[in-house]
Image 1 (cartoon, rainbow, N blue to C red):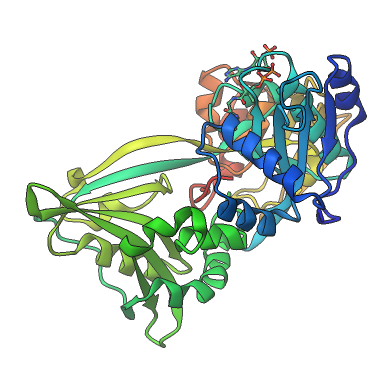
Image 2 (cartoon, protein in one colour):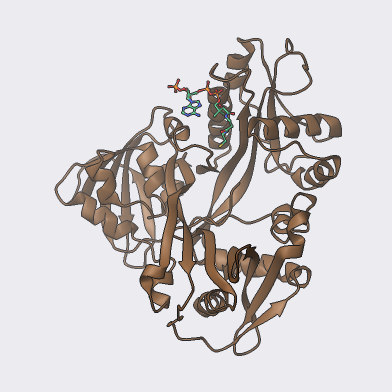
Length: 440
Ligand SMILES: CC(C)(COP(=O)(O)OP(=O)(O)OC[C@H]1O[C@@H](n2cnc3c(N)ncnc32)[C@H](O)[C@@H]1OP(=O)(O)O)[C@@H](O)C(=O)NCCC(=O)NCCS
């Protein structure tokens, strides 16, 4: 059964739009296992993933229950019981750093069959999700994307970024002081029970993270059927502080170079640090291994301090850097007042939103303790900064990870009064770069 929290009513506009093309728009009830299997196989096919085995489907079915699963069916297709489009969604906290979070509507598994693309099906699905979430009072929608060209048109903006690093560790010294405490080798299965609590603590420290569900943990620890083939190569270490309390862990695998046994590549599968010491100690361990010449670390924060932790900053290469978490503001006061800010000021945000949810003039007033009030504005400015922007730029700015000045130079926002962009940047500045350490 779909969690009541996620069972938002189907959007009647989208139902009517799809019905006009003789398509059926409906939600799975969860009771019919074969309907769920067809729905999930359709989503996987649409995303060009391999078909799932019966064992994998059974595991998914078990963990997927609470999620809202919507499909579009074409009664005239050769297999009318298989959906031609899918979307999954659920209510989830989104971390705002320093222990805060905001309620968001997570959207995933958006797929339209190759036979039905470019007829407005994704538009109906996406707008249906946004209207449903807005009607339920959820202030934000969020997603990770296959292509960065798709979701801006619905008001999503990239809010958290990610980097892949490649470190040449031959002759490299880790210069960062080694924290007190100890890194222990542990069995992955033994570490698994402690992972959710450590992860929750590490996610509180940075904006952009979302909780992992049981299935994600099982995949990460190579327990799930889909990832079991990785189990043999997966290694685990745990960092305990000087009092013996676990404060982080790393999962990694090591692959041999066929031509040079002293040139293995170590891949950091996941690094979870609930304290700064855990981060530094775990990096010491990962970077300082015999027979390893290269360390690869995908999906890490863009401000990972690696270059500053080693004797040769040029040994650390950022091999990729890209936008990762996309946010769509549905309720400006609720979304903006949930986080804490870096400076006290007043900024009038004049927001345009083709779908109407965020449209308006909003006065963001921040106080020295970082708290904010956001009110619909009418009247005097009283010296407030003024920024004109679209809802897409507002989503990009929300966590402080997108530079205001870059958006200004790129024409994505405009100053209504001189100096306003600098003032907004000072207000939004985050302690750490926002980061999301998974896909959903
Ligand atoms: C991406 C996808 C969901 C789009 O579905 P669709 O039903 O063809 O999209 P629509 O017909 O509703 O198109 C809506 C708009 O998005 C645009 N669009 C659709 N797919 C796009 C893409 N891949 N890149 C850029 N624009 C795209 C359309 O041109 C249209 O533009 P408009 O606003 O100017 O009219 C579909 O092509 C798909 O399933 N792709 C493979 C799986 C995937 O990438 N899913 C997204 C996971 S995050």
